[in-house]
Structure formats: structure tokens, C-alpha cells
Length: 226
Ligand SMILES: [Mg+2]
Image (tube, rainbow, N blue to C red):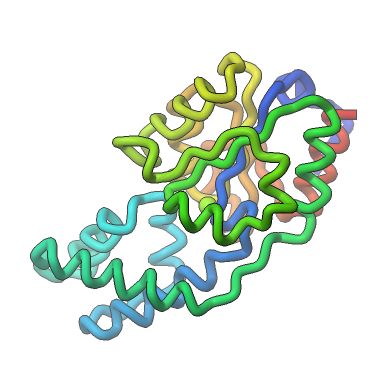
């Protein structure tokens, strides 16, 4: 990417909101594998792209959507809930790592007087369990699925984050890795950087900027905020 032109929105931002899975945490392959294993018990065969495309939907929504998409009848709600419970149990056995560059990106952003938010479709208990205290100390606001009525791709999670961060919408930058997260950020009127950790750039076109990986993300912030 050509960084010669500093982006003005990023340059003047007062807050950066990070999605969690696939952006802060290298967790999407584990999530996808858990869904693949659990759905297999119900005779539904999935690949990782089936999961990556739906990232951002709430667990129950994505379960229902997968059954329909694969030509199955919609199962009763208790089956959807069982499936979600099994998936969460399975996921709890995985050890999830933070992308190592986040350990320098968070303090760098903070050193510029810029606030940090985590905006995720995941549960608050998972945010607190999976993101180490060493990083949470830089985070001003957490918006999880527990905090909003409508999850991504609805703009609510980002609107709620901006309110709590007490900054104006034009001063907020979002980092997302999934199409529905990008849609949520754009619907809230926010500038969005997409990172191509799980999906190729063709899935991320709605974002304002696409970076290939965390090294490019770190370089982009360095360039714009220096
Ligand atoms: Mg994500």
C-alpha cells in the first residue's frame, strides 16, 4: 500500500474502535473449526468460508442462516440454542492468541491521546477472558453483544461505542475484518479500515481502506498518526 498520502480522517481521529475476533484475536480459525465440528453432528457439512462470510451475525442468527442456506428446514429454537451451547463449550478448550502486533498498536495509538474501543458481536465474558489485562488497560470502552439490541450489520454497536467514547462520529476510525462489521461501521457513518485476515479484499470492498495484515495495519497507523 502507498502510505505517502496521510489519510486526514485517520490523522485527526480521536478514537479507534477495534472489532475483536479476527482483528485483536487470532480466533477465527478456532471459531470456524468449532462450528464445522458441531454442525457435522447435525449432518450439515461446512467449510471455513461458510463461517468467515457470516462473521458478525449473532450465534443464533448465523445458525439459522446456515441451516436455510444448506437447504435444511429451520430447526426449532431449542436445537439452535443447543448448537450454540455446544459450540461455546468446544471453543472454551481452544487457546486463543492476540495478534502480536496489537501489543504495539494499542500503546502507540494511546500515546497519541487517542481513545480505544472494542466493538464485538461476542459476549462480554469472552472479551474479558480472552483479551489480556495488559491490553485491556488501554481500552476505554467495550461494546459486546450484551450491550445492544441489534448486532452487526446494524450500526447500533458502533453508535453505542461512539456515544460512550464521547467523541464525534467524524473523529472515529474502525478496524474490521468481516463484511458485516464493515457494513455496521459504514451504516454508523464511520471511516473503516478492513484487514484481510480471514477474507480476501474482494469481500472487503465497502471499507475505506484495506490492509493486508497486522504489519500493514501498524505501518498505516504509524504513517497517519506521526
Ligand atoms: Mg471480526
